[in-house]
Length: 180
Image (tube, rainbow, N blue to C red; front, side, top):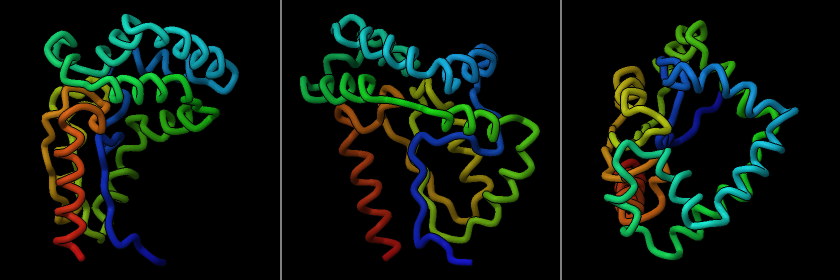
C-alpha cells in the first residue's frame, strides 16, 4: 500500500465528528443535493448569485462574522471568483455520498483512518467558517499523528478569497518546504 507524501486539509469535514454540524443541514442536505434535485438546486444558486445582493447573502451564509465586516475586503476579482464558483458547482451523487460517510455511525471508521495516517499533515481552518466548524480541524490534529494546525483569519468557508488567501498560501508553502 502506498501513502501520499503529504496531506493538506483545508476547512475539511468530516473528522471523527459528524457532518453537517447543524441538524437542519443533516436533514435537508441529502434531499436538496440528491442526484434528482441537485441540478435544480445549483440552477437556483447560479441565478441567485447573479446579483451582488444574492452573492453577498450566499457568502454571508458561509461566515459566522457579519458580512458587512468583511465584504469590502474582497476585491472585484474575489467576488467574481465566488460568483463563478457558485455558478459552476455540481454535486451529482458525490455530496450525498459524502453525507452518508459523515454520519455519526461512521465515526469509528473515520477515527481509525485518521489515526493510521502516516504522512505529514497540514490542517487549516478559520473560526469564522460557518460551512465547517473549527472543531473538525481540532479533531484532525488530535487524531492524525503529528498533524499541524494553522488557524486562518478567513472570514468565511471560502478561505482562498480575500486577504486570507495569502495566509493559506504561506501556510502551504511553509509546510511543503519544511517537509521536503
